[in-house]
Amino acid sequence: MNFSAQLIQRKKIVDKASYDEAHAFWKAEWNIAFAEQGLHGITANDSDKFVYADEVVVFRDGDTIAALALISHLNLHFNAYKDLAYLKVMPEEGWRFIDQMGAKKIMTSGYNIVNKEYRRARVGSTLLSIAIPGYVLALFEQRPDFDLCMGMPLTSLGNHKTLTRLGMRDMHEEVFHIHGVGAKFLYITQQMIELGAYRRDILALLDPAPGFADEPVRGAPAEFHALSRLASERAGAPALEEAH
Image (cartoon, rainbow, N blue to C red; front, side, top):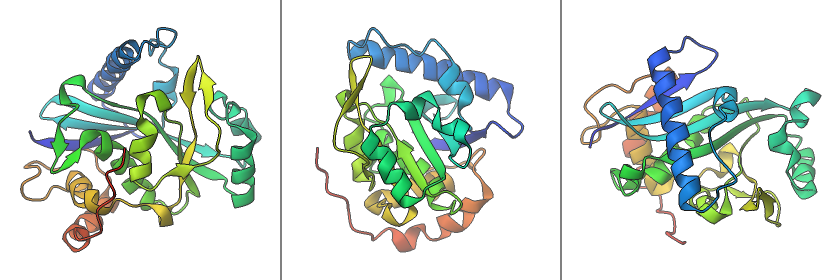
């Protein structure tokens, strides 16, 4: 397998074929995931979540999409953002946390999905289910204008456990429910990111290193070229505990 990463940014020139292919993948794979979990009241047939995303991260194996994540940018300086349906489900404890931090610019990531044919595939030694949110956090790590990165994983799918491996923490204690499905908000700051032993594999996607990819990364921002040069120095970072 020869994985590469593509970052599609909605406010920049977007290739129609790439965007349409990413949407078709997102829709199909999430509908499969929902059905497998018996969540028949939820579908990805409405494209709102996909269209509203400011950025789409796409992992490819050659021409095949292997995994995908959506990123949105929130600015709580503007009251309209506080009325987003995404935030209205947040427990009061989570809002108190945001207010106490004084966080205004927030990067959110959600709807991470791995192609069912690649669920056991790895970038180096890192599963794609860890590499895709890790890539998002590597982006966030280099964006100091954002105060927080947040996610709202579905606890029934176990996605919250993956995010805690990378340093994300609970914003509130209680699990709330959306369409009968448990969910929680998790957060992280740049200082809390713990890519650890996954860092080398993730940086290989940002700027390929020998043994990981033979082609230049398609669409990766220039800010990551310096990061890749540090990959070998950071490869010795402590491994994260593989707790489930």
